[in-house]
Image (tube, helix red, strand yellow):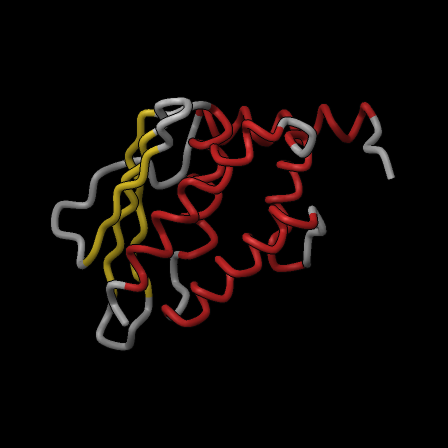
Length: 144
């Protein structure tokens, strides 16, 4: 079903808001793990850092980047979603995001990510969307 122009504008606003004022856009001084991912096609680079408590809870998640609006907005939303989760649940979220990027169906747990339906028809932007997810998975898997 096609997305209405009104809804598309709302999606674009969410992406631009996260691009202009991203959440958790900073460097953590002493992260427990971090991962750097880059997209050779467009030059996007994302470094995702995680601090974990003794109970395996992601107590802090932050990112730094040199990237486009889609990549930065996705990283911003991702850090908000992962912070406070146990590492196993964080991996479940990443699995759900990967599924979303393949079928474009949003489950209730991924609400804000629905905004990225705006790029569904722009295949070259899909890598931008998923880059921070890949960095997060690599970082979290270092904890296992």
